[in-house]
Image 1 (cartoon, rainbow, N blue to C red):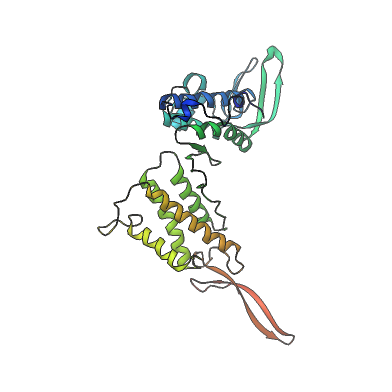
Image 2: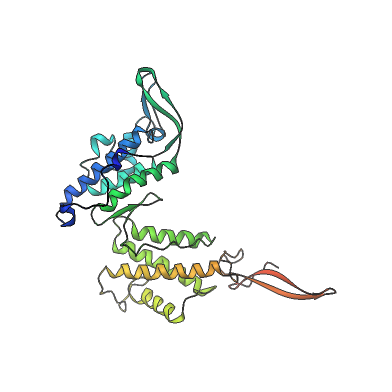
Length: 324
């Protein structure tokens, strides 16, 4: 889909941006203006009718999923008055702007069933849409402008705006293990750490979640990390104000160090889980008896009148349960 909003977007930075002379207020206004253009392009194509509704020359206002007072529901859900967009969006404070962008992302739906009402040139009417496709289109439009705003942001697939990672330091794609608790804890930690407005406490919480994953793996099927590296990671988690709060904790470091600690733990969790998922010896699944992530594939050799044969089974290394 080609948009008018794409016309002015390019990689080139002009003088004020290169020299760092863009005032923060103008920087925010530029983001708002750009996102409003993206919104108007998508609105013209019917991407917001499924949820926000539309006006019809015959039927009057046809409500979407947000009902007859979309402006009120948007305010109730976000505590930000941004709808109608043309009246309220430009001029919002930073947190309000980013909140509105997240809400628009969640309520952008690509038309699937639609028709053109020709009487009085009424226009496009959308009956149903694809929310995932609409959200993807909205991200494609908004992200180039978010990337250039302030220190850089990115609207993610989950609908949250995260601080953009420096080039080469993007979070790894941690493999899914099939264990709901571990998979959700990893994604929650990444989201908690990277989302807009994350505090040092939020970041410590995210690191603590990753340390807990390594702790569980260490106690069951192993972290697959070199022993010295594993020991250093747990020393950081246990002695540097991440998991404990007592007089012996070393907390006299700048918050910027949390970035390094988080990446160290996330990369370690990624390496551990990648190794486990690729290994034929381990099945990262929760034991039905003790509910720990401690199942390991194994086999037993037996003999009958036809000779020796092997039986594959699953063993829990925590409680001893087997599938035999």
